[in-house]
Image (cartoon, helix red, strand yellow):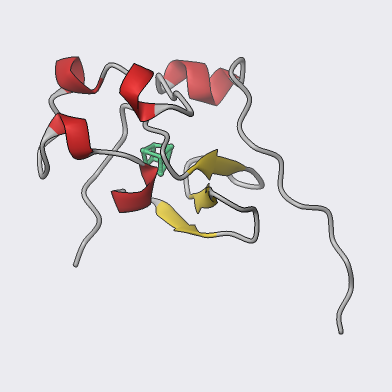
Length: 86
Ligand code: SF4
């Protein structure tokens, strides 16, 4: 029961914010090593363990504080990655 609502769109490859933040829906293709974000080995960093992500109703995708109204791939990454607080 409830009002149906459209699923949030996934951040596109040409999304301006995504481009600015070097977002890639496939973290293995993102430049994680060069960014050397602290808190976790670069090879393990992805949206699912980032502080800015949250659960979404889109399979394999998460909300991200930096992309309001959209969802990011759970296995994505961007240069704002920050280790999720325990
Ligand atoms: S801020 Fe975190 S959750 Fe959002 S796109 Fe970047 S790595 Fe993914």
